[in-house]
Amino acid sequence: LGATMAACAGGGQIGKALKLFQLETSRNPSLWGVAPCGAALTACAKASRWADALWLFHTMTITVGLYPDAAALGVLVVAMGKQGLWRRSLDLLYESEANRLSPDQWLYQTVIDG
Image 1 (cartoon, rainbow, N blue to C red):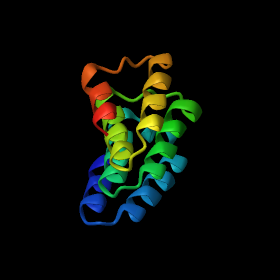
Image 2 (image 1 turned 120 degrees about the vertical axis):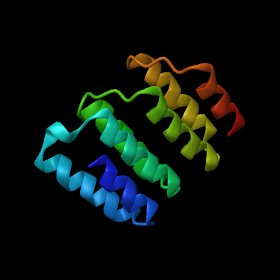
Image 3 (image 1 turned 90 degrees about the vertical axis):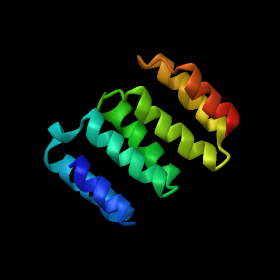
């Protein structure tokens, strides 16, 4: 799933990639995982679709109970920073600390630079 999504996103088909992700994870919830979610977050970030990335992040953490790794969080923080949403990025880092993820200095610097 992750490779297919990356290929769709790389070809400028982010909408198709997100629909594929939603369809496949609704059919088979076991597909929810850090790698596929990371691929989906990366696809959203590359397409400057931070709102979709934020929805995905919250779905995976709140609904599914899956906590992304620092790389996936970094992708989301960078995507939001590019849109000037540094305050929301900082809120996201604080939320992540409460949900078992310890953002590192690079993530905080990314928010500050954003």
